[in-house]
Amino acid sequence: MTQNRKKITRKNGNPFDELRHLLNGFHLENNFESIPFTCGAVGYFAYDLCHFIEKLPDTTIDDIEFPEMCFSFYDTVIAVDHLENKCFLLSVNINQNSQKSTAKRIDHVLKMIRNGSDIPYEEESRFNGSRIKRKIISNFSKENYLKAVERAKQYINAGDIYQVNLSQRFQTQIEASPYDIYKKLREINPASFSSYLRFDNKYVVSSSPERFLSLQNATDSTNKQSGGLVRKIQTKPIKGTRPRGKDEGINKKNAGRVALKRERRRRISNDRGPRTKRSWARM
Image 1 (cartoon, one colour):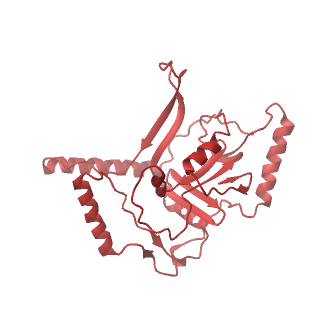
Image 2 (image 1 turned 120 degrees about the vertical axis):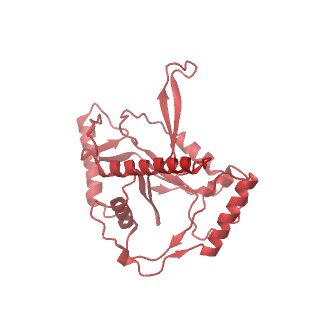
């Protein structure tokens, strides 16, 4: 984890407890409901964190030495509204009644951007497929992958599991920076949930159309015990299957529904849609 530009290394203890301890030391009021992130912690959780929650077999080899959890804490954020083509500066500990204090913080951030040669800028990606000089290698052979699929089916039939994320890891060497790869992903697959994270010499580049989990504070006037404040949990998975019908007619009908939804998503992604009025406060 990084805080105040210093790296904090935790060698012992439960990482969830360590993160909770750090988060309890901060409290931030979000006065801009239309802005999803107004300073705070940004990072990732790895699948291997499951071993801190449940006792499971651990037979994998850590050959990439990537941390199970990594977070950075930010007190200043530059938010870009691509729909309205506007940029917003959000920062904590600013005296809102002092224009001088606000102007000083803005000048400080602008100076960091001008002098920060390591800050990626918005430019067309220079990465293309021809820069891949070597073969793309998978950690699975076709034979072993098919065996893993059959083994997963046996676990499902036995009732040991009901879902499995059977993934492959591909690796190769390319002449492109991680940010070039991120930009290319945004060009060919402008997903709703994409990210580019840098932690020293470790990078995370992702592009996903799926919201895994969202936890937010909300108001509920009917809940008097909590004072009207409740936690709102939202998940929007797009993967999964529907059970087979009793006849081919039902199966074709379900397949048609899936195709229709895909066509609607394709049209929506190609149409920016109506512009919405933002209530963001620009500084």
